[in-house]
Length: 166
Image (tube, rainbow, N blue to C red; front, side):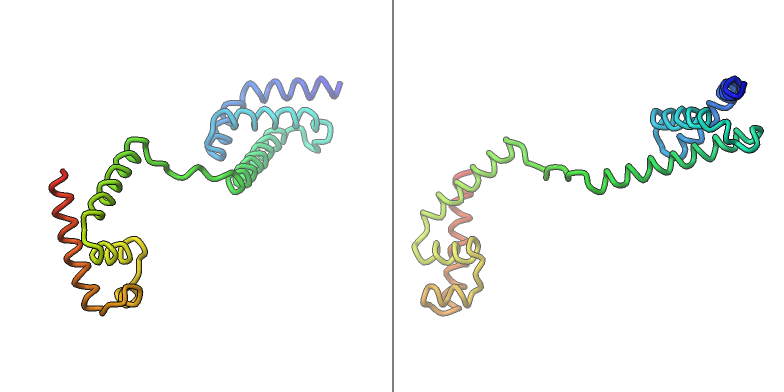
């Protein structure tokens, strides 16, 4: 007889409260399909625990609390999954962009080879090796003023060569 009472109670509550409970769960978990699963699981759990309910008239309260607790569990699980999910791949440039960059790089290198040796050395040490003027002066065995002069002249000549190519 108790099983029939549980069946009847679940059937009646399901017919009258399923939609409101799904709305409640949807507000909590922000996902309709998951909300429906939460509510269905709550009904199954209530059916199994119906005999243990002290007051069968409070079955709806039991269901609401069960939906809230299950929604919290879903949210906790999501948080853990998001925390430990592998990070997405970094943005990768398109093949076209990579090809253009490679062509530009090749043009700059080709233009560098047209410069006098000292200007080319000063530019490579400054912009490719990222050395300071003092470090370039030491590496080339010249003064800092000469480094500035070679760098400025080299940049002007490089600009002229690249403008003529395009």
